[in-house]
Image 1: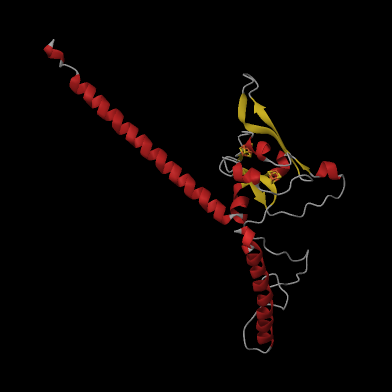
Image 2: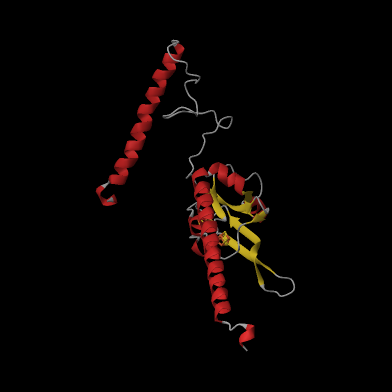
Length: 223
Ligand code: SF4
Ligand code: SF4
């Protein structure tokens, strides 16, 4: 389909929509000036549709949910712990190989513990592709909306984000990705219902087995 140029046409359609919306907003603004319509907007405003100039950094455009910038690690607000199990999938799928993880180790058994001891992303290399978030089986890494990361000093050091820098609460995730969060909540509910049904089915099967065993046992006075 893309060979037929439908993607280009779709993109041009979006640009045209914004172009037209700019003039619609202008007419609304004139209407407000003339007292015809209670528009609380000034002419150029981030809340307007269309192409606007905003007074950055005093104002900021609210990013759409699917905007992607350097990923962050999600902390479970119920436990305060990172959801990451250091499974190692995201470093494998990361195209420019900019994720480094060190697994936690049990100090006694020396066996790996499902939690990251270190988690680093080189923000100078990350290309914001979102593969890490897409492939994570634990919803433990998500793409951020925070784009103001310019370094003010040592670029190499400041833009190498460690676990402390990368970890953010799931409430933050819910605020910037409401649809994704709602999907997660629904999936968790469905999983809990599935586990409950399986446990109930097992308990019923065990009860039937116990009843059958009791019925098969000869009465004590039959000996
Ligand atoms: S963020 Fe997800 S994919 Fe990456 S190591 Fe942690 S659990 Fe695995
Ligand atoms: S967004 Fe892409 S490039 Fe950046 S860390 Fe994730 S997988 Fe790697």
